[in-house]
Image 1 (cartoon, rainbow, N blue to C red):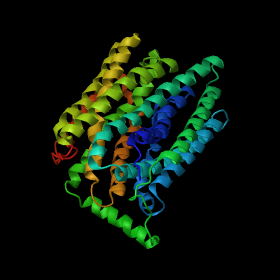
Image 2 (cartoon, rainbow, N blue to C red):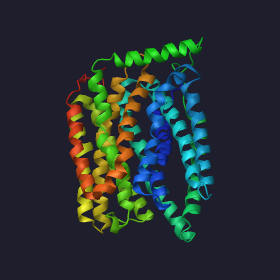
Image 3 (tube, one colour):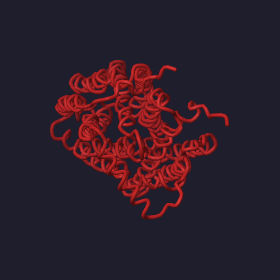
Image 4 (cartoon, rainbow, N blue to C red):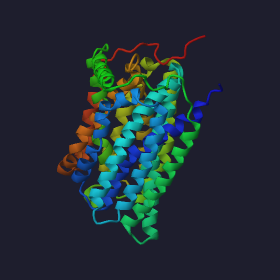
Length: 424
């Protein structure tokens, strides 16, 4: 049987994985900021939306045991599209906060389930070298979805506000209806193009007892892995500084100047994130995948750690200088996004490395659950912390927290051959 080229489905699969995530975690920030919520309220409400990604291992055994991962992928994409439509419908109503939060929750649970299936499908459909080579590509398109969401879509919403004379709710509603159509198109594409690996098959003789037994075995074997303590510490703390930075940095860019923010309009914010950010992130992600695929994860681990942490200092500079030049802002965003794209490759590849062996789909889900927890906990109080100390002191605190990333990385022991292309 002719193999389907991974380029035909890996990029779109991870774009589809990233788009609902960025809608829940980033677009919602800008939406609620424009609708009048405070930074503390915004970060608190939206950080709770991480919960589906934290607890997704509770239902990951069902993904392994019931139906195929391909079936779960296309089914959840249809449900996510429906959730986008629900958000669009409720924004102009009087119960906009309750309504949008409900459909963001539906989107979050559907997206978390999609993540489990897609990541397991990725490991079944590609060999080890392809996984290492495409980890940069998948990370890039996942982040491209992030940039598309917080860049292009926010810019579209801002332009619609100009067209409809600052009707904020109506403009955002139209934008979300458009995303609904886009996601339905992704669902149709994947329904037709995704290959059917032989390994992607439902388990036979499945019942409640076998599901429970598999779940218990998944937990036990996960915590019996070598370096379990070092691995979990790495998963929890590698992205902890970003857990503080991610939500507040977006609010900082669009907050008014008298509040210490950059005062960018939605169009300017979208232009910066959707052009220069895309270039920086794409170059960083692809370069990270190529380097790891050529020399292995171990060789590039520390350069990637530096890349994902040190560029955060650009926000310290921006908060003090408050430059009016979009060129300066673009350069800062490029540096930060390039570093993130390059450095995040190490994290994603380590999750694959740690998940090797039996139950790798469920083990990978547990890994990403720890990753989500590392983002959820600091995000709950990030807005309140920023409001209490201001943007400048807040970004300095983020830089101090970057030391934690270096400490937990120092505990890792990685096979120097992992990720390398094997000689024939």
